[in-house]
Length: 166
Image (cartoon, rainbow, N blue to C red):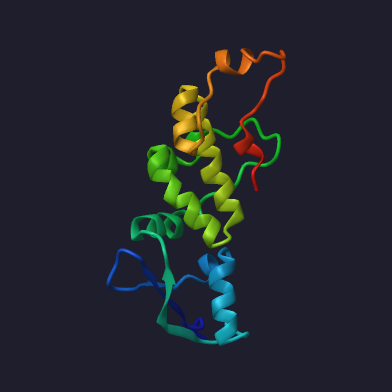
């Protein structure tokens, strides 16, 4: 008996032609794709399923290809796992933090938590080697110098009010 057909079309924001995901394991690791398929056919794991109307993915195709190409390869570091290194994720480690940002955002959008932790780990390691002002710019937060923080008349440190705005 042959394996059931599984095809899901996805359309990235910068692509005119949809990409087809055929691996059930990738779909199972992406809750967003799983929910979309289960809405069409709750028995999709054991029966044929072909979704031709593309699911819109509001991210660049390069980010999507990276996620889908590496989703099954990457195992997230366990808590207190000091043995993992960025080199354990060579494809991610080869990218800059700016290149990894849309990949992390897409993984979040697709609810791929384990994959998000892998990419976040690599970004964190890369950021830990950068100057604080570069990290602040990357995170989109204001850089406040140590002198400014320590120069309060009342002797207390006053973090920016924006940290507490909801």
